[in-house]
Image (cartoon, rainbow, N blue to C red):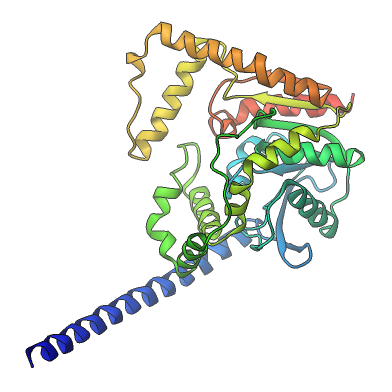
Length: 366
């Protein structure tokens, strides 16, 4: 008798808890949908929404600047950089008066549809090409990739050189025979699908600041809202997980497939670009301010000895000599400009980046 009573009580408690979980999930989902609708409205208002079909899914193609400008610059984001179309525009402001700047979100990024296709470098490049063609944006293009976007730019310029006028690497991944070999790899698993489903329900909002840090102070509150919206949309996707699993393979395939050519290239080197202690200290101070804003542990800059700073500077020079310069030589006709700083140099030093890139693009017309 007692056992049966305990069982009934346990069943009631379980049902109550299940009801509370369901109610919490329902409220989370409703709030998520309402807030998402407002965020999408803001993205549309600011010109970031333009879905273009590439077959069984659509990619978002956002174009800014001079539609009838001298050049069409196509910006390619780094791994997981769902907010690139917003965060890079402080840098591209110097280019938009004379040129057209186009941002394409890869499948699963921001406003682009998700896909179950493996995100190989070849697949990504073909998606890019279809999106531009279907959007009526004609070649030739100046590709402007950041980070691993540089690998996709290599595949594109080696496979379809007639479509590429020039390439500007914004601290692109420094490719070599064994780049990213230490990455875990793997495949998309059941857990990844569960997390994507939970994100669709709105639970990603509870961990937004864990996955997406606050931007530097030079960005406005509205820009932060736009970036958060794009990040939340990406959290619902599987394609970026596939791309992450294929990171080493894509990098290696891109490097091995490079066809040396005369397409003008500019490699803006930031993370391996330090030459002076002052430059290194400026970076640490900027990064500390960003850490402080995000309530992270900061670096005791005064505690770093002059010798330690010099070691870091010498280490970046060593990496340039052993990996970067051979990579640039393999690509052909590649100018390397050192602008030491954060990997997201377009956030740390947007105006300086813009000046360097504009000078390079202007030189194409001379």
